[in-house]
Image 1 (cartoon, one colour):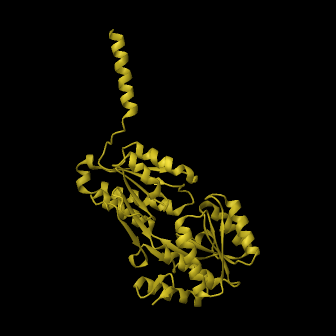
Image 2 (cartoon, rainbow, N blue to C red):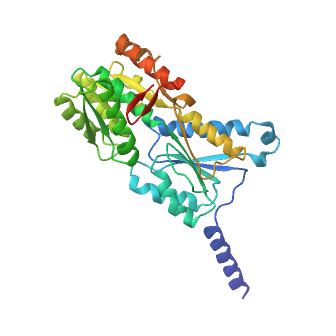
Length: 344
């Protein structure tokens, strides 16, 4: 009988260990969910860097140093490039019920988080580069990609000798279809009304060979400036442009070093600082429940790189002056970008 009791007690203990969510050992526990991989993805690498920077600074404050129980921790999950798996992996992360907040960056994630909240209503999410309002447990912050896309198209058109430019995208998604593509085209046609704008789809975020094939076909047809927004597949687009001596516009980070003399513009977003700002606010007890805030060039979270030596060496002075005037006006608020183009 005693042996039977011990066996039952052991089984019950094992059941409780397996079925109960892990307990936190420290103050705030943060998970960074990478919808892809950080290697060759500056946007995601900077997200992780910003969160960790904020946590490190928080843990060095006197209140935390004097009370280690308040220390914050960070765990990072790379979900891989198969978008079909992101929902399940995000659910797995939330199901552990040991992370106070899950921080990520991708416009598709708020939709994936909604069914998770039905199972785990106390889970908090912060999504950058995304928009959703009215859901109490989700805070989002977006970048003014109207400005980014317009400047990418405008600069591409100014540099195009054949007046043919294009986007090579990983896939179609709402921000691409409704913001990036139309405002890239608007920028291109604002610079030169008869510019032809093409659009091609890789089908995934990693196939560099397919990226190169698409770029080769575009270039053969006369396209001489391409904006790749396709993750790892962008390397194939770059290689094609380098080999054919055509040009590349870049998005979301400073891309001039990828191919000096080939990359002609970089419209960037300050992912590291925005991630750090939202993380710091959360650690200090502020959470923007159900809100969505957009940040642009006036706020310092979107920029157009003008001081990189490769930009200065590659882009003619008159084009740089044209762009400088436009960027200065946007930052000052005297110029706005809307569906009609430039409003002064």
